[in-house]
Image 1 (cartoon, rainbow, N blue to C red):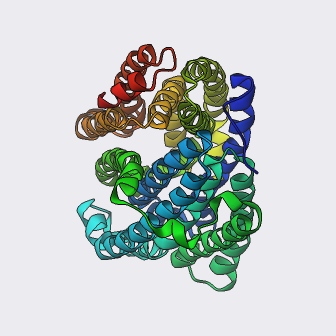
Image 2 (image 1 turned 180 degrees about the vertical axis):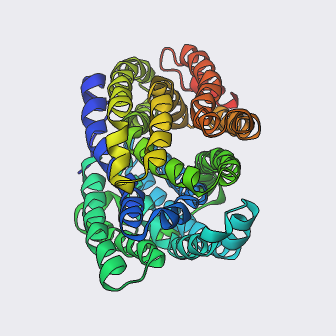
Length: 454
């Protein structure tokens, strides 16, 4: 079911578009949350550390995929907003072709490099083999993840945020059924957790294909749609590649931080991994508002309704910052109880470390909410340079935290890495947005296009 975001109240449209996104993104994060929870409960803290230390490598790969597929589909949203039916069909073909190439390349690179990267990250010897087995299987299933993410992002580009949420929820339920079966009944251990994730993603990809075939004719690819010019493919990659590399740049900072954490021992690694899973779910409302702004901005940019973009940003800031304060307070006050779910009795140090992480991050969520809004709005306008620079700033701030703060303050120093990275990224994004917003005046396309050099 497509949705036109160029007519009606901006606040109402953004809110209604965001609510399913929040649920969908939470379901997406619950994949790794469930893995971490069940592994920690059923296989122990050492297995939890093994799975947890792969989190930055998963972020490196999955972040690249989400960034690229989201970026490619922004062009689809722009064509939909411009009511260019042929352009939407051709864009779907371009996204499919580029996704296949991406899947092949990433699968080969991931499987060949997984052990080397974990050794390079100074993964503790007692958890190395478990970590290698887990991440290698995840990388083997990268093609399924690419296909699933591309399909759901194309559906969102047409204004439908509800259906991707349902698809993700169904895939997650399948994962929740499979994981205890693979861990406890089949006794597959850590590899079982990875296979459960891959198989559930395949299940979601099949459901997504069936839905597009039966319900979304705008995304049907006809034979003539495969006649794609280099220029047309470039227009997709111009947005998609910077978004993908931006996510990867941020992930490299997480890898550097993980190296510093590995030197603090398995307890610190396990605690950071568990608290990160809670944190990743908590930040989904802010991220979802940002993703909504990308779709909203892309459609209104395609329709040349620039004033509506600025109205939408103001309303979205009000809603997202309010959410960020509520979620932050929840983590601060209920963090110990959430951490207990992962490790149970007798792991007081893990719970204490987790509470430190959740308190520091929760108090700074308002910065993250602004970051997402400015970043995705600029990307919805087709801009790529400033979000990439902002990603580099995140990398620098995380690296500085890993090099200096962890050395000086130990685990607490590691907990400050994310808030510092958010601040370093948010400043250039905010400056770029407000410069750009002055150019979006009077509906003049040439003025907006002139901002792409920012």
